[in-house]
Length: 108
Image (cartoon, rainbow, N blue to C red; front, side, top):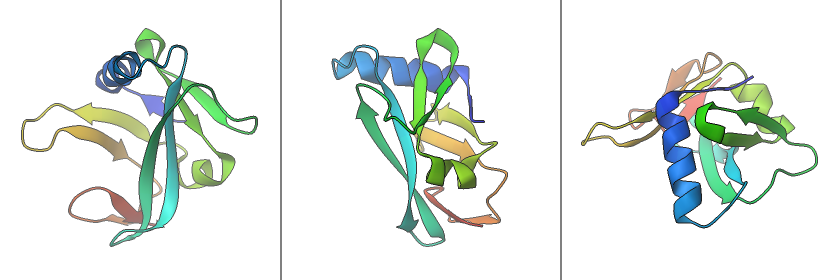
């Protein structure tokens, strides 16, 4: 399960509207790379794929995650930081043993 905070939900809905993707969601995935081993990936998509897990947040926000990525981010809280210095999505991933300084990659 992935929890989506109110701040993240607002940003997801805002960006879907901005990109004209009605009924879509934010795809969150992983790829090998970054300075710690795994790197988060993002994409705005109109619909989930057949094997995706779909997580619903407040205000109708949806997040799509493929099964392989979900194994490593299950239990994560997806938030959106509104700080002027570090604005962007943040992950509180209980599976991450260490993270890089920029927060974009992690190791398990």
